[in-house]
Image 1 (tube, rainbow, N blue to C red):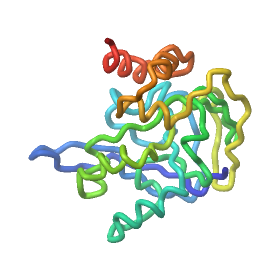
Image 2 (image 1 turned 180 degrees about the vertical axis):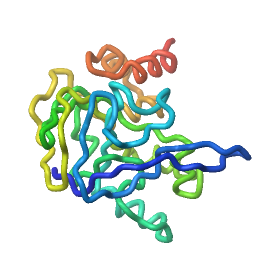
Image 3 (image 1 turned 60 degrees about the vertical axis):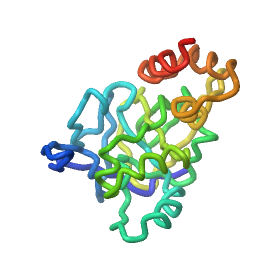
Length: 212
């Protein structure tokens, strides 16, 4: 897996339900490297820190190999990397093979997989339709958020190399599907809730959803 694009953005004003608000989802490729810090990417704008940035969402990564799927659905969009609001576009990333809590090196940074991305209306604004939200959920191509264990610089061409895999093997895709669907396996639900590296937000969501 290698980095094919580093992406950053500025605060962009959008109109949502008759009101103006700002979003950082409009990210575009940059020719320079980016620096992963503990709670965000240096120089990248995080508008709403209640739902973006922070320890569990320091950097968002999306798979280049998913782009053809979306381009087929939305051929008229002006396609560039960063379309999903990701800071890093990486080829070969597969959510069903990436484990929550796994540790990777990338450039001079060390990161840990924390959670899948859940779509919100701002993704719909960028795509020009809120239909993308259901399609995003149905496709189960959520990309991954990472914690930054060791801050560092990442550039195009850097490899995304697994360094350590946790004993509790739950994939990003499994967590994503638990968050959005109701599985038959009670054991999987409990395993996810008890997972030592699941994000606090995801654990609380699963507890509310499956409290019975």
